[in-house]
Image (tube, one colour):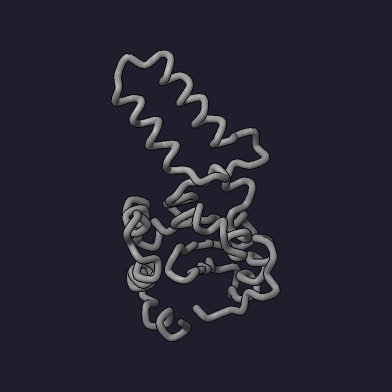
Length: 172
């Protein structure tokens, strides 16, 4: 683990190439990105495979230049025909006309509130299972990403679980 300058990285492909350059013998490389204690991302690069990504708060990441790198169209569902805004609107319309249970209306409102104006979740997005084989389960990673947790603290917990907490602190 080392600190890498991301100034020349403009896309996820650039980031993956940089990670592969740092790898020895196509070993797995984990890239931690933390933005001013508002969000974090873990990008896992395994050899020539497509990177796997987990973002703690997609809405917060979308307001960052580094977030643009990790919030790919594939991850966010853009360009695939899956529009989260349309889905929420459909749920709201269905609930307003067909629902006999008022709790169902509240659930739809909660879903709408959980998305920002770009249709990105105000919370985690991506592959929560990308660290399972390193001993950090999907539920544990999701719990570290819940509202109210500090992204820097979550990355410290992750690094400690991976046995590289001292290295992370050295590059901060």
